[in-house]
Length: 162
Ligand SMILES: [Mg+2]
Image (cartoon, rainbow, N blue to C red; front, side, top):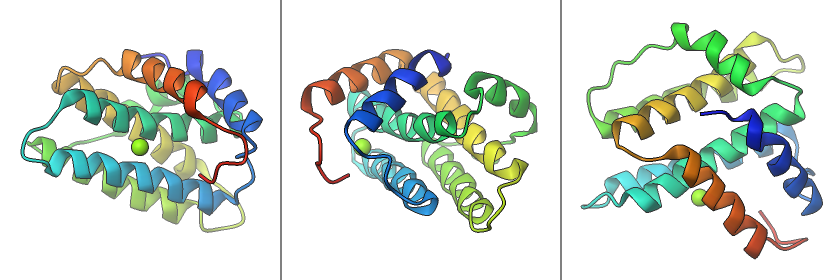
């Protein structure tokens, strides 16, 4: 999975929509909202990979936009940090809990005036976990991201509240 390939295009689309107007914690809250949508899909009696894939793509797109706006090389960051990411979970549901744990760390890393390396680490860790989850569930993350960007381009409208 190569996030850099899509990040610039997605960042420019978000910018065009006028949605780069939130404080950092507001932007991070929207990542949390997408993780909640992932959890809601996993809680359903039957997991439909297409819907779950779309929500996981949403998580990635929000993170890609934030990382791009901070000038991170997203793919390099995921590669650099992946050896420090561990798993305790042995189930799909547990994997989503791991996303929540990293998300909590991300929020805490962004509460102060100066961002340190933890901010980048937890963003890239979340992306890495999504890659892992999609691999294990046979979801093609790359096409889910392309499909969602396509859908966004068709339905996105300037000024719509996000
Ligand atoms: Mg969503």
